[in-house]
Each structure stands twice: as structure tokens, then as C-alpha cells.
Image 1 (cartoon, rainbow, N blue to C red):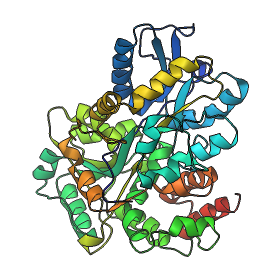
Image 2 (cartoon, rainbow, N blue to C red):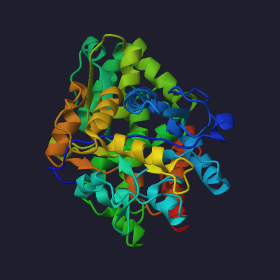
Image 3 (cartoon, helix red, strand yellow):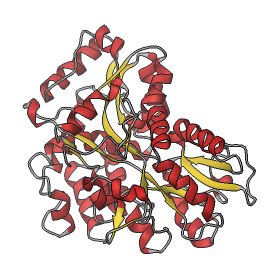
Length: 423
């Protein structure tokens, strides 16, 4: 990823009609569930705060339009969207993940003809070169990237001070900090592996250093059949993940702990921090009250200079190719790409704008992400470049089985390699 790329940020939306029954029915905006002036949008529940703010501003700028947003968890969004699109019940605008890593990823949905071509919009030429491979298909743009997201250890500065710790710079520093937390009847990192998508975050944070510092082209080699998970540094990555657990760094029962509980543990002081996407900063801040938050890249090496951080366009919006309210959908897409829309979303969501934005000032908690981005030390989210969505699903299951003692590292990696071969 280029060190000169602009500040970035992400967003997520999905479908509505069938979602109303299957998912949360909470809505933002003043419109009803249908009608000529109502734009139907569905969003990831973790994006509720920034999406509500964006919708409010959009409706103020477009008083003739109402926006209904249905929120759902990531798993529900990804598993439900294809059914809704094929049945004609999908919303006008919906969450599309960059790359090819899950059922709602741009390269997966575009192949089925579900996404409108957005190449003619002015924002398409502003997308950073490093992001085009995960936002385009055959040179055409099909999603508007909204935020640039990172994965790091988000922590309460007061709690870190309470245990007598400082931000770790090396792998040994992390282990030492885990012990300091235990000496104060705390854990260093809350971990909610009961929530499927959370399982990937710690080893993504580790793999940025263990795998991609030395083998930046691993994903391309994997897709070309020239590399495997089993014969790569992913073996070291998963072992380090388990080593952290065995050292008492995590919540006592990660597989029995949810995403929401992990954030609450940081707020209550049971945990110093949590490895999470930067879009979780507002929720962590809500749990932590007035406490000041910080973030550090999770070290995985004895050499601090080798440390990398996952940072990428995390999710984005697509326009339904068969939208029943396409004109309103286009206006909303344009607003999401605008200076105002991206600034609002980034400020409310604790991320960085995905497109150049001179008016945006980042949350100080994001300093490590912006600094490492400028230094060229960010690594795209791994699943965005994996060869098919089944690999990510296999990864979720593999981590949960590792933590339940039902699989070894070798067995976990084999299951991921088996998923690659289904492509």
C-alpha cells in the first residue's frame, strides 16, 4: 500500500424488505417502509452511529427524500443478501465488502450482475491506486469506499497506567504486559470469539507482521496455487494466537464471550483493551465514558521496525443494479462520496475517510494508523484478497475450534487450504 495515499474510511449497508423480519427493525430517517420518496438502505449494526448521522445530514440536504435504514450483524448481512437480491427484495443501497473474501464482497456480487456500474461518478478517479484492486472488477468501479479502517489494540489509557504498563513495541513486551495485567486481576485484551467475525482480528493483526513483512505477495501466490497456509508463516501466526491465550492475555472463555461483552469489559476495567477494527472506537468510548483511548499495532516480532498494521478499505456501499428507486440511490451514493458525507461518517465512526478530504481531522486514537499508513506499514485486510469467500468462513470455524481444543494448528490450516481448493 502506498505511503502517500490519502486518508481513508469505510461504511456498510445491506438490504431491507426481507431484513425487516430477519434482522433488527430499528430505522434511521423519517420515511416509512416504502413509497416513491423513500430510499431503502440496510447497514451493519456496528455502523449505526455514523450511518444515523449521515442519513440525518442527507435528508436535510434532500428534504424531498426519506431514508429507511435496517441494521443487522455482519453474519446476517452476508448470508441474507444473495437471497434478497435474487428474489428482488433487496434495498436500493447495500453493504458491499471490498475484494473477494465473503458472500457480500464486490467481486462475488458483481459476477451475478447485482451491482450498478459506478465508474462514471467523479469519485471513482479519486480512489487510491492501492484500493482499486478491491473496489473494481475488470477496471470498472462498483462500490463507493467510505472509510479506511484499521485493526489494532484499542485500550483505556487509565487502565494501562493502572497496571504500570506502556504501549508494547515487541512480542516480548506484549507477554510482559499480559503478566502485569494479571497481577492487577485484569486481562490485557478482551476477546469475543463467540461472535464469528471477531475470531479473525487478532491473527490478522499478528499476520500483518509475521506473514506479510517477509512475503507481501502471499495472497497472490495462494490464489495462483503457488503457496499454502500450511507451509507458510500462518502456522507461526496461529501458534502465537494460542500462545497469547495460554499466557492469560485474553478473556477467560473467548468462545463464550460476545463482541458486545468484550467492549463492556474494556469499559468496566476488566480488560485493558481489545483488538478491534477502528470502527469500534465509538462503542468502546461509550463503554469507557470520559476515559481517553489509545491504540497500538499488535507486535508479533522481536524487532519493532518489522511491525505492520492491517489497514484497508473495510467495507463500502453498492447500488442495486435493479433498484426501484435508482435516482435517490444515486444521490445517496454521491453523498457518501462527498467531502461532507465522508467527513461525517469518519468523525462519527472513528475511522478515516476513504477519499481525499482536506476538512477532516482524525481522532488522536487513530494516530498510529495514520502514521503507519504514511510510513507504508499497512497491510490490506487478508480476506479481501483470498481466492473465495469459503476461506474466511473456514478461518472463523478454525479459530473457534482452536480455542475449544477441537483442532490443532495444522488441522486448522488444512481446513483453510481445503477451502482454497473449492474455488
